[in-house]
Image (cartoon, rainbow, N blue to C red; front, side, top):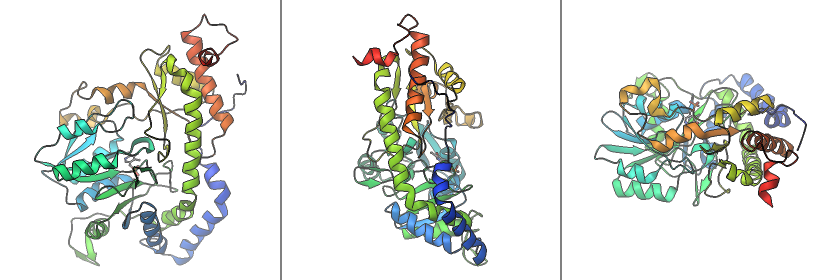
Length: 398
Ligand SMILES: *Cc1c(COP(=O)(O)O)cnc(C)c1O
């Protein structure tokens, strides 16, 4: 077992930015020289290249992923009187986006193994008022495009993807952002593709949706001082677009790095299944872009999640929980009328999940150190009578 105890952060941007620092500075310098800070050339370029990368036809840059959802639903004609189905175990921004569109959020549970929306439960939640379903490609793994498109055509509803954690993810021959009528992306710094601040984008195949979105982000104006929609001010800064343009060509290799790290975690953690530690399941390692690498600390694990997280922190290993409280139990949304027992899997996962360090540039030795630390914490607490010279994993493997 390793005795080096270097600190391992949860995320670290330096590996992404240092090798391309000169290009990033040049790209920002170009914007300063042109002075086109709002709706400038670099934004137009980025909208085109990012939409293309998503295999979508149009891209409209906005101020955040949250705005991409709220305004995007509005651009798709979803609003007051409509029901929108979404998973209970998503980041609260998905819910905020639905609420801001004026539509009524309808939560459904998730699959306990993948943490993705349970589409059987979603199908049962469909009513005559259901207008849209939001699959959240959680942790970087896509919800099945085939099943989504089946539901869309059977029930005549819109698929609006929350792809904020799934830049360039793939499944069943589809890329995230190309499945539904539209998809929302976030460029929050820690996302797979991150700006130097906030940012977001709606991508769509529909010209009319893109047109409406362009108006909505720009005070509802279809031309200057002529306001056809009740819009707002939500543009992706040209400066951020220039940064994102510079970073986009590197995204495939950064995602590949995440996949490599995830596979190593999978391999090293496999023996711990008997100790109540299991990774969130993936449909296939290919196409999953691992925004997060999440494990479950099961009820029959020797130690509880909090003890494991604290123990790792003491060993210099930072972790996260995505997310500790499901949307339907957030204080701000109690008026929606959901109870703490409504979505068993989402509630259970919120107690079990732990996100391990994951970022491009995370070293193999770091991954080994994280897993060794988990092994020692699980073994020490739960199997105190084991021979102290043997780690739990060496006992399980033979
Ligand atoms: C980050 C995120 C958002 C919101 O994006 P912001 O840019 O932070 O507004 C929405 N949904 C999910 C699933 C996210 O992870």
